[in-house]
Amino acid sequence: MGNFEEGVLTLSRLMREGYDVPLCIGDKRSNCLKEFCVVNNLNYADGSMVKEQGFLDMLDYYKPDLLVSNNFLYLLPGYVLNKYKAINLHSSLLPNFKGRNPLVQTILAGEQKAGYTIHYMSPEMDSGNIIIQREIHISDLQSSVDIMRILINYQPQDILKSVELALSNFEGIPILKDGKSLDIENYREILIGIDTLKECSRKLRAFLKPYPLPYVKWSGMRFYVHKAACSTENNKINGVSLKLKDCYLNLLEVSIHGEVGFDSKSFLCNMGIDLIGDGP
Image (tube, rainbow, N blue to C red; front, side, top):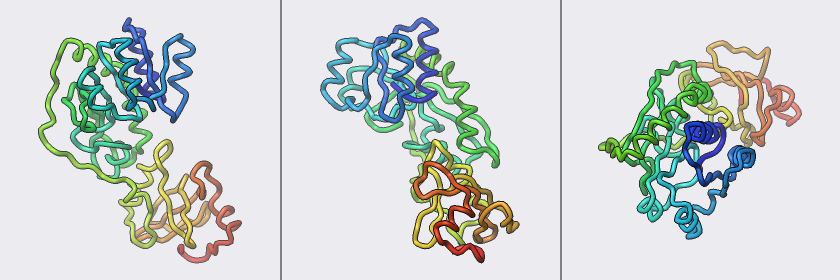
């Protein structure tokens, strides 16, 4: 079960190691896994059916020894997990940063370490016994995408080791304490006149595609920030400069839809927004 590069790399490695994969399950976000299955003559199903009775019937037909999840959109129902053993790769050092976009949460919290956890799936999200954790040190210059690019290189081998442990009935290590988590929607807005250099830098490092983009509010509208820099210097030559608390946000590319970024000066001028001064 999975999607994008993480899911395809995991599946490819398991196949090359000789594991029989009778069924692959993807989701609506991308056709990456589906296309890989077509090329390799693998059975594929859409993950939106995981909460339907038909999903359990399908598993009962194939009778898998283990379910393996990497970057899968949906939670599995408890009645499925009560019958079938399942493991999942979550991109944080559990118990911290459960839920969606854990790498974004990690940067926003100012952590100096990042990583992922491969754990048994349980009815409670990201709460099952830990099988393997991979930890790396991160700097104040690395973005969420930088960290993702590093971690993805370790995932196939760690998934493979976790599969071996799970099939040998390794029970894993229980999560005995609560961790911290952030609601990233509370951090996406870059607050003009309020955010500090540190806060702005973390938001720009955390919120990059494929993750949600940050935004600024100007003239009553929300402008998504595709490309920007924050600095103590007021640099208006290459973009639009907005005054924060102790620094300036230099907007280079923005949009109002969030898909394609446009040159900030030209776009905002064409919107009829006055660019004189240090912001709204």
